[in-house]
Figure 1: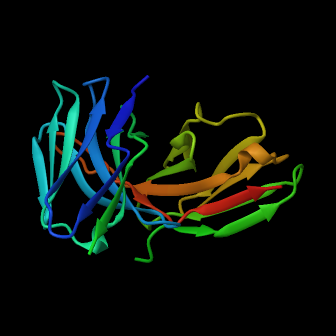
Figure 2: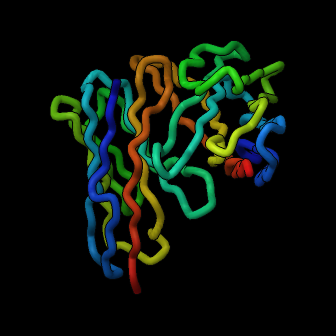
Length: 111
Length: 118
């Protein structure tokens, strides 16, 4: 069974800092990897999707990388803002398009 | 597009009652997924459909859970009878596979239904 682990579970940083969120998975035979953001009491918002053939994707201040051979992905957030405070979830796509989620990193960016 | 729509947003019921959760996927999407989120177990896939046909229901915890998709624009998740341990947030997501040299699907989630079973 594919295990997805996210470290750290919680993170607090001052505004303006660059930060890295980590995601690891046990089975490198994934199809794709997706990063989501979840605000308290809300649904999930897709941030970035990295196809298995890609090494990274960028959107604004966000950059996600994927290393299938080592079973790792990182989400880099540049110049963090209080509005970035949320839980960030990593999900790997198994065969058949189902997603297997990590438990998330809860991020707090303080002014 | 309005995105994935779920109803109700909150449901409080008593143990033993039947609960029906509803989902309207994004128009044109041919995959629909039901997930459950709890503090202990995180997000777990319950079942998913392709073109209204159930593909994998191995995540459905017990026979008390059932899901249907009578048409491309509507799906239900039913719990009968409900139990306190079913309390969770239930999410519906939809996607459309983008085909190419390597196909992929980007899933879009609804706001969820927070279920509390007393």
